[in-house]
Structures are given as structure tokens and as C-alpha cells.
Length: 627
Image 1 (cartoon, one colour):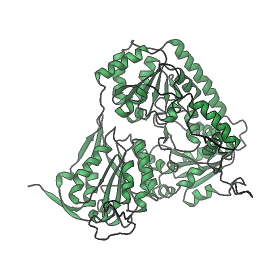
Image 2 (cartoon, rainbow, N blue to C red; image 1 turned 90 degrees about the horizontal axis):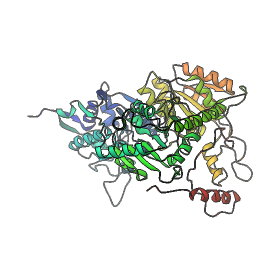
Image 3 (cartoon, one colour; image 1 turned 120 degrees about the vertical axis):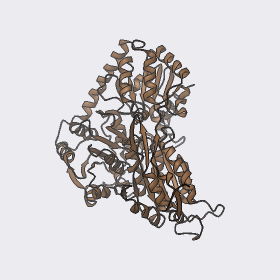
Image 4 (cartoon, helix red, strand yellow; image 1 turned 45 degrees about the vertical axis):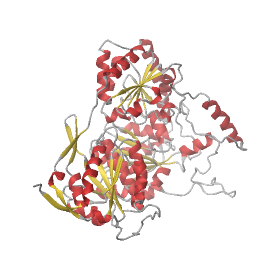
């Protein structure tokens, strides 16, 4: 007879989660490393009690905002190379719906997170319960259904015995390198607290092996033919290179063939900045070197990339007639993009197979091609130097000079986190990555407020590393509350807070599309009602200090260099605050080297919009469908 243990549904779930592991390449890790939680009536007596019951088995982190808890979990998962994840529990109601943004970010970026929101009574004993969404035509709908389109797996556990298949399916998806993302198990509050006799096998340790699928021989043969026929190939390294830990394989392949490597935001750092084949970021926020190579490439080899509009310059970047695409990707959906030749495989195993089939002397680009892109790269590096250089150290820095000051004090162990504003563009163009995981820019969803909670998650996964959250004032005001969590748990993240009095990035975009920076500056209203008065007298440094963080104010480039050095050496959460240029001033970085499609009003009376539309139509005319 099968032995059983009587537990509540919540207790059984926590016991189950604590016994799940992943394994890849012989390395075994706990799949759910910890649980974040904010408790309300929908989960306090269920998961709240269960986490207390098994606090020795399941670490717990107290969050301040449900969305930011997901961001912290995502930061942890990315730094853990998707082999370990965190769970997040909330009550039903606002706590549950606050998960949606974080879930979308996780799923879009293919990063695992387990969401455990409470739900309304399955028995309908209390109906409507506090915070219940009443849907007259469907009694089984709750606000948690908002999570369905942003989850890779969703289930509502309305009976205790339904937990077993739901939990197993949740782990399957979390550990799947193709399907992973946000996984939601909605847990009615009455069911959470209900007792059931569970088979003890449910709590036995279980290992989920993370696959490295090999390339199909026919696809591999076609890929080899495509590479051998190419005269001007270009590799685009995406986030899949990092997820596969294929950086070394890519470096060897690029060195052997001489093929230059450009990177997406997610793929930056696939090669160190000083690797001979690294040519920097690609696309709208890319370098002039990479974008010119893309325009003239006859074969584009995409490795682990989704080919977003920023990468392809909204379909205008790859100009050469007859250009072809070879897409090495673990996901067939992405492997077939741009009508490309798919090579469906794990990035590392696929690169190894491609290198083996080409042979040690089988393919190398012409020396003239190598000389061309190396000379172009050297010219770009000179532009970076000019952006970083501060000729007058006793004046307020530009944003690139802020990055230059940070560049002076970090080494390969530091990790930089960013997600939104003008910083992603400047970082993609200018930052010189020193290690494969130094550059952590979330640009799949580009979610304001991501940086500080994500830094906490990264620091939990890499406690011996220096972790920097780079945030502008607009992003900071969205979600600073997890500073309290960092202070509470002694998580020594470093926040570089850049004040430019508004949404500087969108302000520049607004101007380019004829919207005249409307509604993008943090300023008082003028007599005409427009927000064009003096900058608001907000003190974000004081705000950070009020949340318990040590704050260092920097007024000049010299101050900034000193403050960054002090912050890096600190063993407590520390913020460096610096004011740069105002929101209606350019950052000082090189302009975009490729287009990005943001539609412009087709009809308008204001001259700015009319001129912007004329320019827009010229760019749109260059877009092409690759077939």
C-alpha cells in the first residue's frame, strides 16, 4: 500500500518545490531556490503558514511590491542561467494583478519564474469574497485569468488532488529551455488550507534534465553549405548564446573563421569587447561598425536571437540584394524567422557541430574583410573614448561621461543592470563588456522599475559580485521600494541614480516624431499650461536615504569618480546620485546608427509633425520582406 502524509495543499506544494532540481552538463541545482511573498487574506493562512511550517526547507524573502518581487526573481533566474528560479506568492486581488507586468517580462525574455497567486473560493462558500471580480456570464473567472496570456503554463488548482499534475507540469515548463517563462498556479484560498493524504513519492527528490538538442544532419549540411558560400558573413549573437553558455564555443568559432560578431542587447557580452571578432551592438542602438557590416552582409548567422525590430532596424538594416539568413536557435519559431535556413539546436552544441563539419581549415573569410572591420572597430572605439572623456572634471557630467567614470573603476566581476530610458542605447553602443555576464540589460520588455529589484535577485545569485543598478529618475520613481528589502536583508547592491529631470529618452523620440517632447519633462507648468517651467524640486537622493540606503551625492565628474569608488568598496546598500543634463538636452552619445519604426502622424498642422512624416516615409520606403 502506498504510504501517505496528511498535509494542506499549501504545505504539500512547499514540500514538493523544495525537492525539485535541475541538471545540465553534470551540474545539479535546486530548481526553486526561494520564495518571495506578500501576504493577504488570499494566501496568508495557506502559503504563508506553509512557508513558516517549512522555513528550514524553503528560504523566504519579504517584498514590498508584487511586480518588483517578480523582477527580483527574474534577475535571480537570469544570473543563475535559468537553471534555478524563484517562486512569488501574493494574495488574490490587487496583489495578483500586480504580477502581470513582471510575468510578461519573464515570458518575453524566456526566463523562468513561478507565480503562486491566491484565488477566490473554489467552493463558492464566500461569494463574492473581498476583492473578487464578479463576471455574470462565467462563475469560474477571476482576476488571475489576466495572467493567462503572459504565462507559458497556467492552471487553477480547484481540488487538492489536482495539485500533483499541475505541479509536475509547472516544473516541466520551468526547466524547458524552449518553453520557459512565467508559470502560474492559481491557488484558491480555501483549497490552500484544505488537508489531503499525499503519496510520499510526490515529495521525493526529482531531477529535471535541461536538454542540449543536437542539430539535424540535413539542416547541418545546409548550414555548412551556406557558410562556405559566404563572402561577407556576419554573426548576430542573441541571448540564447548566454542561456546555452555557448560563449567559449562562439569565441573559438569566430576566431577560427574570422567572421565578425555583433550582439543584440540580450547577447552583448557573448564576446568580450577586446575579442578580435567583436564589433559591438547591432541595430538601432548598435555601433556604426556592426550596422555597416549588416548592410553589406551576404549571410547573417543569427545565434539565439529573436530578431526584434531594434535588431533589424524595423526591417531596413540588411540591405544587400540576395542576403540570406542562417538561424541557429533552440526554438523552431525563431529559427524560421526572416525566411532563414533553420538550424534547430542548442547554441553550444550547434556551434560545435558546425565547427566540426567546416573542419579546422575548411572556411575562413578573406584577410581584406578582417582588416576592414577591425579598422572600422578602431574608429568606433575612438568615438567611445571621446564620449567617455571629461576634459573638465569639475563640471556636471554627461550621461556617457557617467558611464566612462564607471568604466574606470569596474572589473570583469562587476555586473551592470539596466532596462529602460536612454541608458540602454548608450550602453549598447558604448559599454565595453569584460565578462560574459557583466552586461544585464533587460530589453525584451524594457520595463521601467526593473533595475533595483533585479539587482537584488542577481546579488542573491552571485553574492560575491559587485552588482550595479543603473537607473534614471523616471525609472527610479516607478519602483524604488525594494531598496527597503535590500536594507532589511543586507544585500549590498549599488544604485547609480542619474537625474535628468524627465523621460529623456522618450523626450528625444517625441521630438523626432514631431510630438515636440510633449509630456516628457519633470517641470512646473507654465502660464500656458504646458510643462515647460522650472525643474521640479524633487530630491531623489533624500528619498533613497529615507528608505535606509547610504547615499553619496556627486556634483562633478571628479565627485562622481570618488563616489563610485567608495560605493564599490561598500558592504552595505549604497546609492550614488548624480545630476546630468536636463531632459531637453541630448545625452552626448553618438546618434542612432540605424532606423527604428515609430509611426508618425499621417496628417497634422504643426510643422514639426509634417517634417517628421516626410522623413518617416523615406525610411519606410527602404523596408523589405526577406523571402
